Amino acid sequence: MSELPLILAVDEDAEALERITGELQRYARDYRVVCGPSTVAALKQLEAMRERDAAVAIVLAARGTQELKGELLLERVHALHPHAKRALLIPWGGWADAETAEAIRTAMALGYIDYYALKPWSTPDELFHRLVSEFLQEWRRANAPGRREITVVADPWSPRGYELRNLLARNGVPHAFHACDSEEGAAFLLGCGNEGTDVPVMLLPDGSALVDPKPEDIAQHGTRMTTELADSEAYDLVIVGAGPAGLAAAVYASSEGLRALVVESESIGGQAGSSTRIRNYLGFSRGLSGAELAQRAYQQAWVFGTTFLLTRQVTRLGEGPGGHVVSISGGADIDARSVILAMGVSYRRLEIPALGALEGAGVFYGSSPSEARQFTGASVFVVGGANSAGQAALHLSRYAAKVTLLVRGASLAASMSQYLLEEIAGRANIEVRVSTEVVGAEGDGRLERITLLTESGPATEAADALFILIGAQPRTEWLPAEIERDVRGFVLTGSDFETTVPGVFAIGDVRAGSVKRVASAVGEGSVVIQRVHQYLELAATTRVS
Image (cartoon, helix red, strand yellow):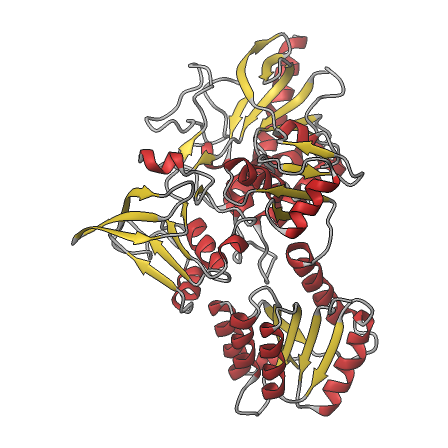
């Protein structure tokens, strides 16, 4: 029988330790619960578990008076068990102590803890359990062993395998991945009659298999993604794009009685969906991943009645008897009284032919949470100087031996949030190189080397992966000429978010002059619905008169 994942708690206060031990027994069926007073003993146990590759789910530690303080133990946990959730235990009101508050803020800024936990003071203490339960849910979603709803078997360096894993991860579909030449992968392929195949295979909960599936195939088989509309009735509002702006618009539109449809070509959450940890979003003091934020918003909009059409593209926007006609890939035309453009932007591509040949095989545009584990112990490079690049570098640093952040400019300070700058500075395995660009790449079937251009000239270095998160390229080439754009392709709007075509609005990153932040996109998505209501009321009055 395999060893149960560990929940470890350390507190030298005997009374507090007794309460903590009692509360954690709730999880003893599925986890091995170990509680003790010594940070040194805890560290030895964690080191031993690292040696035998045993799973650690949660480590809780009080500061204490020992030489190895709780926050220092948790710092060591970060290196020993990077997937474990970590919290500093403090007594009720402990945040008012200046030294404790500074320890919490410093550990949070450097990424050594996920949050602080109030020591339980009643039985049962559901506030304590809420944090523990959230930690366990987050840990199991990303790290738990065993079979998941979906199993993917593919070559880890296959571009098609990467596309498949990325689609599932960014749409919040729980899945397990096995290399096709691994023992587990070979067994799965043999069991479904696809032994020796060199294309990705996806095993479904009922035991059937999809061989080299397309996105629409995946969506139609138990992944909660809808690719076809059940009816052809007109919509009050069609929203193009399911990033933060489009999702916010969907929530407010449907909650206020509008019949709304969201069309998304790739994945729920847009670019933000690939962010591994957003710490400055209002109301989430521990931070949350972009995928989690997107899935919460998706479920919220769905409950209010929003219809979602995924893995489909809007190919044309024109006039119709009810206002507008939206053409969808696959042949459907949808009548819409109003339209919101929320397509977001794509990462700018580096025009280096060698990179294109290695895309998905060590070269990635954006940061997929599904790829980080693949580069455990590796040397990884991240290109970009904005928050998305910083978040990617921090996430990869939990696995990679070294992460090098490449910045074309002279500094990160102008383009990255302070909390990310502090955390990056505190990671020993992240190096920041300014005034540096990628100009070449090499590899036989996968990335092996990149060529960098610095002020001192070109240099070639070994590289296991290159993640590119630069620039902002709007997805507006399909729009009609009547919708005006600036020289870079961003949609021009008035202060009411309306474009040069009445009844068509633009919000979020695709809008010219927008602030490229998740919170501002969500704000625009909520405010624009008032403008949509005003337009629809005026249009109805005009038709009647």
